[in-house]
Image (cartoon, rainbow over all chains, first blue to last red):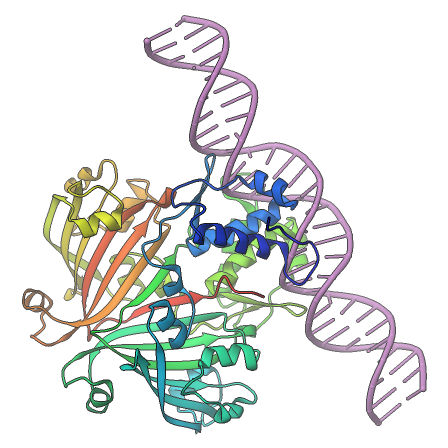
Length: 248
Length: 248
DNA sequence: CATAACTAGTTGTCTAGACCAGTTCGGGAA
DNA sequence: TTCCCGAACTGGTCTAGACAACTAGTTATG
């Protein structure tokens, strides 16, 4: 019997949230079926209703559950796997696609930001930042060409990291204590440029997906600006959009 | 003096949320500056703190504000305009881009769904659904080729609508009382196919952005499956990703 | 002077209720 | 039988507090 502990570092709403998530993930609660009512969950786990509601509300926003006033809360039937919709870097994205991520570091250096990147990262022009350019592999095959620019106090320490075998996102979150909370991303279609084509194993005129992403940490601070060129024939971008800011 | 009314159809947290949104939009509160503390907002508007928190929490999720424990709540500096990140149809998207939306209806009919679409819309194969194929215009120039399949009880009434001048999304929400709450979207890069090229004013081998979207209404019910082909040289897709489901 | 302790203010979590609004279903009335 | 109404449920909103965790500034102490 897994329960909720009232002491310890993890808040109760978070414990319940993960507990509910597991019930859905494991298949114990099938899509379309109702989960216990909020009042039942309160009683079962010994927490107050507002706390239980917080857990459910977050899972509804994630698309795992949906609510119907007067009827109950139900397990959703998402068409796209949850893992593909999370905020992750390349490595975690590949794992969600059941492919083996890899990287070949082309350059890694401290770099004076150009005006455009400076604007994205909210730093002064010519400010020194870390920049790494990598050929990204999926199951050892070239998939994308990625340039990541990272800016935070002490980012020069990234020069010593092994970025051929490490996930930049994981490094930033664990070793550098920079939780990555949100990102804004742009996606376009284009054709290969000459230099890209060769590295990606494509010919001239082949289609590519170009992405630009600003990733934010605490204090609303942008810490990474990443641009990438994906092989058009081997990559699909997935996203989930939730309605907000509209009248009832 | 705009205040909050305790009676009426709009909940208090929603009134405060829109009130705060307006303070930011109007520039009264500039990016990076602190907004009044939660307790100040409670007192000022005569509501309880949990209610004020709900307003702020939703705006934080939207990316308009960010919080720092022990310091306060601050106005964010998003790099992508809010309007471009909302869940909208083509018409509203074009307006957010300051372009004039238009449409030329190619076909509009009741249609027996194919297996793939049936799966996306969660209906039985060969179920009759409404399908409209439109050439979408931006400032009177071809921008995208869009096929929307809509499924709900009474969707055949859409045959009588003027979809050359109406927004399908707006029709569904207002006239048919189907709030569109969330969507899952796929985006890929590709090249024009012969039939597409001519309609879009492109040549063979030009890059296009292909999108597929399932839009959900209440009860977790998919109501629309839309596929679109955008001119690669004239369209950028924007999205915002929020981290969720990770430990503190 | 440097440091530690204190204080006041902030957000984060949580409680134990309350009432409203919508759904479902059964029992009684027409 | 059919229909309506009410009871019993559901989620939606809201309150008036409480304590914890964290930040920033001030004060007291070594």
